Length: 199
Image (tube, rainbow, N blue to C red; front, side):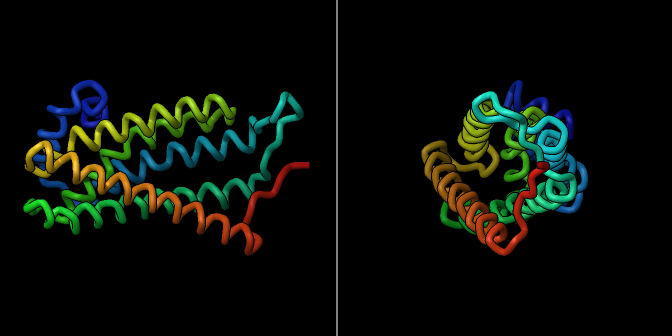
């Protein structure tokens, strides 16, 4: 797992070819990659919101209670795990349009490795500062999109022009999934499961 993560940052084109050549089950992928890396932003957010807090305009830092932070980070962790599976399912469904025949497991593997920069970028939540979060978040999103566009033609074994269209479709669905997660969060908060601040 660590070799692939490092390879995706140093030589993504070659690394996608190597990942494509491996047969990995969904359960193994989740146990050795997704469960671990998705915990990075969740644990970082828990520590950042309960220990460091954040301030607006240099005021007193605002923190969450430990129980509230635990609830929110647990829900976000579960959403990340589900998000990888949903994106993998969409990639598998969409692959038929481009005459590619990857297995469902391969599509989930592709979705998981593509999301790696987002997971690692979650370390910024240790210090919840607006500008740091925006800077690291933007860099993480940009590199995730780069991995998607570089990896799709190689991993799906399709021409680069079709890979561009396929990647654009996956990116659009990813944005829809993100908006859906935000909508569910708002509904959940409206039901009373929202942040509780330390006074």
